[in-house]
Length: 68
Image (cartoon, rainbow, N blue to C red):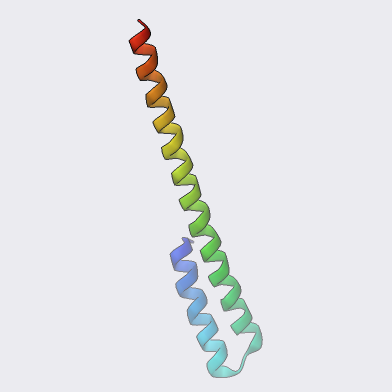
C-alpha cells in the first residue's frame, strides 16, 4: 500500500474509532497514518538520493569525455 493510501485509510480508521469509542481502532488508525508518513519520507529520500547519484554520474562522464 502506498504511503498516501495508508494515511487515508488510517485517518478513516481513527475517525471510526472515535465515533464508536473504540480505542484499539483509533490507535490502529494513528499507527497506519504514521506508517504512511514514514513510507512517503523514505520514498522522497530515495528519489533525492537517486537524483544526486545520477547527477554525479553525468558529471563524471562529462569529465572523462573532456580528458580524451
